[in-house]
Structures are given as C-alpha cells and as structure tokens.
Length: 119
Image 1 (tube, rainbow, N blue to C red):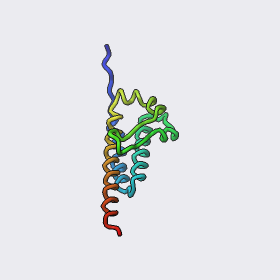
Image 2 (image 1 turned 120 degrees about the vertical axis):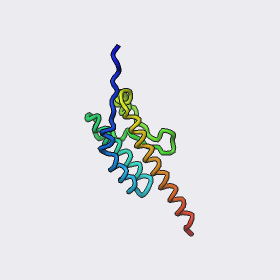
Image 3 (image 1 turned 30 degrees about the horizontal axis):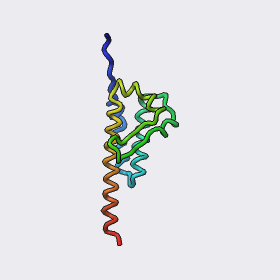
Image 4 (image 1 turned 90 degrees about the horizontal axis):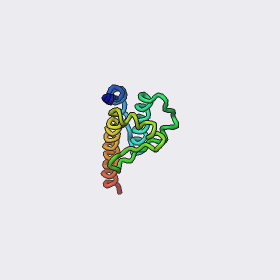
C-alpha cells in the first residue's frame, strides 16, 4: 500500500498573513472584518486552486458566533474536499477565521463600551 501524501500550505499562508493582520486591525466595524476574512480566504484559495473564479467567493461564509466560524457552500466545498483531506488547508483557514473572530468580538466589545458612555 502506498503512503498518502500530505501537503502543507504554510508558505501560502506566510505570503498573505501580515497583510491580513494589518487589514483586520484597520477594520472599523464588523462587516469590514467579514469582508477582510472572505477576501483573504479567497486570495489564499486562489493561490492553491488556480481554477477558482470570482463567483466562488460567494460560497465563503463567516459566522463569528458559531463554534466553527467559517463555512463553504456545497459547490466550493466539493471542489476543496481533496485539498482538505490531503493538506493542512482547512486548519490554516480555521486559523484565519479565529483571528477574524477575535477582531470581530473586539470591535463589538469596544462598541458596547462606547455606547455605555453616551447620553
């Protein structure tokens, strides 16, 4: 039996990570955080799966309230299944999602605090 080959996409992550963190910190409201996550995730996926086209971006969801804060709709998920099974891609996207979730919650918390001091 042949050994299953496992691929790492850390290189692709490193190429986008610092810009991603900068854009998240520049985000001033929750919808901007969502946009940064979705745009960056698509950019990462495009580096790994060049066949993706812009219409696939609509199949990426970010739900920071959920335990797993990202989701791919069926057409995109099916396209990525073999990448998820044979690489660390899903874990890398989970890491991006956790970072975005943290920033999202931070903005909400700051907005709540600001609201308390208004008359």
